[in-house]
Image 1: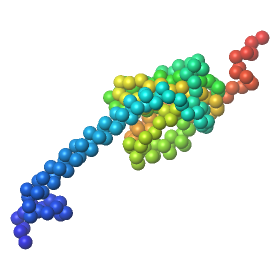
Image 2: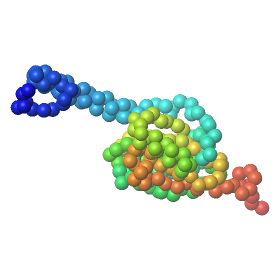
Image 3: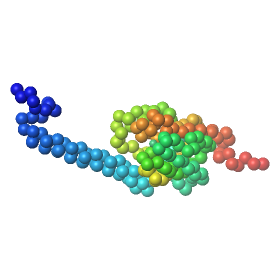
Image 4: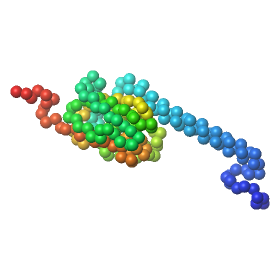
Length: 197
Ligand SMILES: [Cu+2]
């Protein structure tokens, strides 16, 4: 037994230090390549999103509304996102039936996202994002915005209630990157505009 040899990974064959060095080198190269691949896919995620927005949006009724058409959006709300894990503004009020175009600007140096949902839905989704940080998620009620970029979504709030908007990127949601949306029930039938006498 040679007690003087350096002990490292027990699974490697230490009888040949040269071979061990090569293995280590290969492993490091592999790691470097993997990191490049990961960051490339993270970037592609953002770009891809822009391309997708041009295509037809799938409209599915959610508790917090339904995908809207840009041409019926009479209101634009600008939202700022920052690396301080905050949205500006943090509170939004809309009326039931309103279609809003959100212009979401990322002033930070890291990726952020704007996801509308119920608190319960966002909680669940955020948990998944922690388990699978690279999971693909893209829905008409979310915008993934790269650093310095701007994203847009159009959403129709056809159901009243209190909802959230949030950045579900792992760590961001947990740091409090959440805002509130209140959708006031339209009191009158019709669109409420025609009530002047
Ligand atoms: Cu974020």
